[in-house]
Length: 349
Image (cartoon, rainbow, N blue to C red):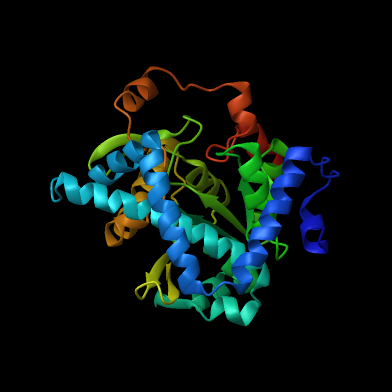
């Protein structure tokens, strides 16, 4: 474990299960295969795997089609919609290929593939120099793993909490690859949330992925003209601390599979108001943040690698009936980390 990783962890990491050790061994092996495989060949393999998964994973295929239908609206035919959905699976497979290459890339190799069409590093440099801290928010758009890796390699060291959305086997392998450069990444827990608050108070950066209400505990917001629930964690944390939210997306730019670059969109900071009306402040912050999400999704809908439905017919109705909180959800919820007791304890210092 790297020294930087140790800064954030106060307890000994749990012993890995046999399944986790096998997953890590396979991830290490596959990572070495990607190191010696030409990128064009790797992307050809990735595309075929993506096609296979598109046809074999009926539930995920229908979920992706439904999500894209909301983004495109009435401006796309059913056949074209399905073609774009298949491209989502290809994008996901290419993302995984790139993630496997991460352990073998040095700083210059990694950053050489990044283009900055919106703002530049100076925006984050100013926030870092001012010591105000920043909340980095991204989504499953483009090469989203590149966001955290790039920011870490450039010295911003965003502290990111993660939660399993896949099985233990895949999760262990993916996390091994994500941690290959020592990035501060930790599973969600109340203690980790308190550490996240301390990172912000000390002028550091924290990170959220916020384009789906995985724990079914977010708030209603209109997204592409249709109500759904989305996570409020970044908004509430920004309101509580006065810290700016910076939306960052790494869109893939490829030339017929022969090469690749990432268009790094670093958006202007969003400051969440703190008035006596918390509900209004959060609602306004949600509108501002997810307007930025819409802007980036419209740019390349086929790069939205979201395999769960973001819109469900009964979500807004159930959200109005009850808050749907449970002890288990509050402990393992990156989308809703700001329990009042946690905020009180962290802001008291």
